[in-house]
Length: 95
Image 1 (tube, rainbow, N blue to C red):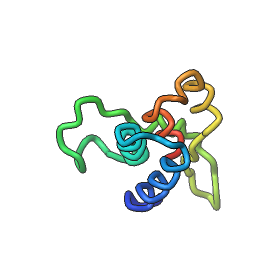
Image 2: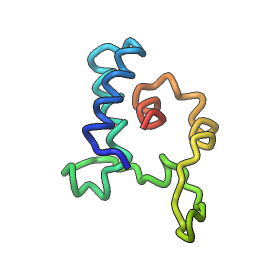
Image 3: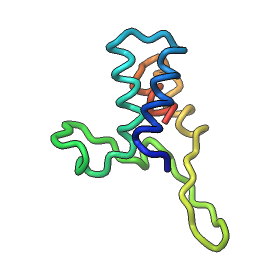
Image 4: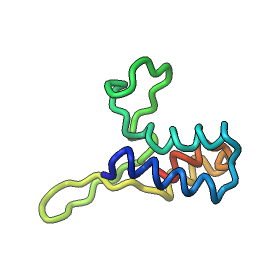
């Protein structure tokens, strides 16, 4: 999994291409990092934590004898397609 700084760097570049204003850019960048915040341990006092299974839609694939959770982007898009203009939803997708 990429580090937070890598998520941040990519999100920053993508947000520029999307033409977001400052508030939208901040929401988009945070949403690129948020799926990997486990139980609020790394960022304190999150009021509404979204678990990674509801953002990554993982499907288990066996690779070299190991069960690996692989994100299903198509399921994410299907579920949130009517909200992809929202910077937070778009940020989660970009993640």
